[in-house]
Image (cartoon, rainbow, N blue to C red; front, side, top):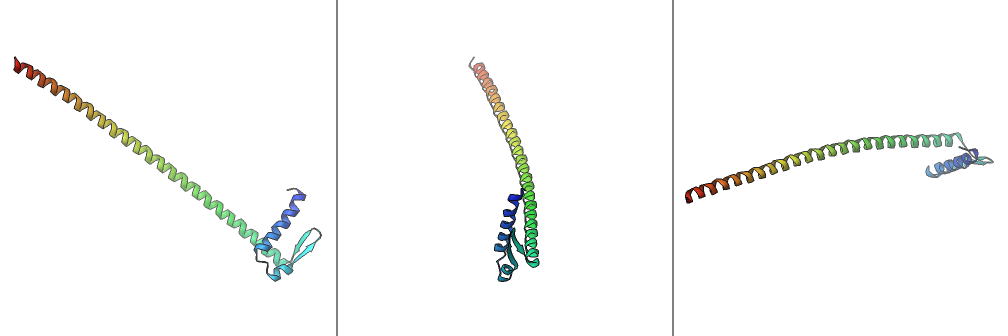
Amino acid sequence: MRRHVKRPLTCLLISLSLLLSGCSPSTAQDVKRVSDGYLLSEAAMRDTVAGWTADRESARVLRQGMDELRAEIAAQAEDTRRLVDDLRRELAAERAEYNRRIRRGRAQGLLLGLMIGAAGVAIAK
């Protein structure tokens, strides 16, 4: 970061950490304004660093959780794709079997009709 951006950012982070920590009277007394920004007592600095460390750890845990969720979602998506493909194959097989039975039934009906017609012609003679 550039120097002119770093100083306000540091002041902002310190101010936010103090505001979020509840600003107890003892913490407020530990902060002194100096020409370059703010000066914290050792205890306040330790608290601030501990807060940043906890925030960093929370962010790491959240990122890890998001990665795990992404992996789960990808696995579920793959399972769903596999299931849909299986269902499509089963439906295509059932449709093919149904069409085969229809064609077979039509052929048998036509053959039976021809045989009855031929028998009818033979009897009529």
